[in-house]
Length: 194
Image 1 (cartoon, rainbow, N blue to C red):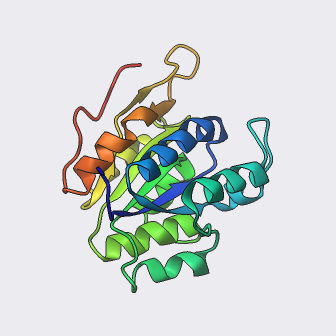
Image 2: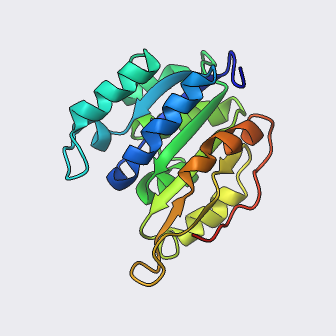
Image 3: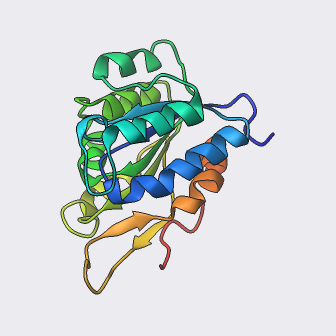
């Protein structure tokens, strides 16, 4: 299979409107032989929203992956010293998480997992999903583009008329972007038009 033996950390953060699109991509990765360790932010772990209940998301993740969910900084810390993963995918990645990754802030399970992965000089693939990508997070996205071992799923403005600063990754491009990132390459083009 396409991903046989690949150990993938799949981190979800609180862009709740995107999570339902991400779950089928995790299943696709598992169906292609990837061993997925789910990692969730505090928001995904605890918040029920109009997009779904936290317990339902967690049940789906456990059912699809068959693995325990990494939910705390303490749970995520061994990823580095034990070199547990080949790649981490952060999808969806909120502006808050994106800013923390860029600035080395490790106060969540997801940011600790990314720090642990980068310490081993292994790839992190980010699927941006933020309403302020062309606002306060534009600087952080620019920095991400220049970070070693950080790759981006192609993304673009999802509502330029109503939400002119918002950008979202093309979720269906996670698999091809992952295949490039594990080989140290950024899939092209990075910026797409919806």
